[in-house]
Length: 218
Image (cartoon, rainbow, N blue to C red; front, top):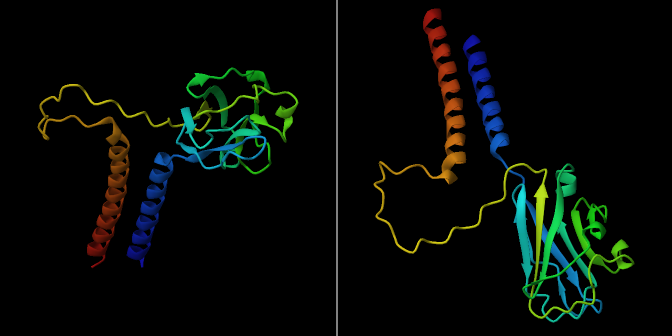
């Protein structure tokens, strides 16, 4: 009976430690989605997006807005971030139209759960919102090919994924596998592996105690 209790406790400890390891290394991810329509609703884009993986700067680009005569709705919604991480925030850094930076009044940009849907919104212009009568941008701006919105997220922890590095001009000789240093990208996996190893050690130790208790009892 005692052996069963020991094994049950060991199993419970293993589950708890596994959960702790997952919680430590899991990062919240949110989709930042563009909401755009010109005043005539002839040109729209509600699908272009970028994945927010932690604190850092992100750029959302759309070519689906090409041909828009002006801005009717021009927002970015980070879906679920207000509800999931109410301490997090985002700030608009830059807006580019057809490769040229568009000036805006930073004090007039609206932020937060503007529609009470749990999303964190960056409202650049909205003909149905507060920015209609106090616009941060020239909403009569036409779009020939694309827009880019750059913004910075804070309060989530972690960090945004680093952009891929360009390949070097010359390829260096490969490093032997046994002497190659571990890549930075493996740090999390290695740490998680250590946590898993700790769980296994705990279980093995508990099993050893149970076995010793069994031999003593015999």
